[in-house]
Image (cartoon, rainbow, N blue to C red):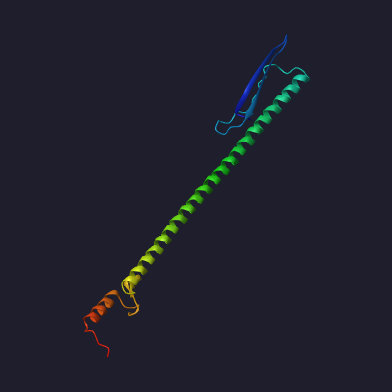
Length: 166
């Protein structure tokens, strides 16, 4: 059920009637490498006695365990991928929210700065300023007057001769 092996060591023992090959390694499942094939043990020799039947049974058990391990590793890999995707999506959402919050903070700061500038201009120009909808606000004029009405009224007042207080 593993697809990568490290520290591979092999031994071959040759006897008078039998050859035994032993391979040992540290194995692991690596998602970047294709999954391993299901282990298949082939037997060329015919089954003659009970010992051969036990070996055939053992071979089938090994193949079953190999198949089950492969399925479990595939499921584990899918779960890990799903978790990684969720984590990645969460990080993207958090970054987007932070970016949006910074943008909103900049907008609010810009609005605040603009209001301060407008109020400073209003104080400097005689306690009046233009607000929304082109209306002028001052201590002398009604907030319902339009900009042009206020300007006309101001010009009219300036045209009058100054009155003396006696």
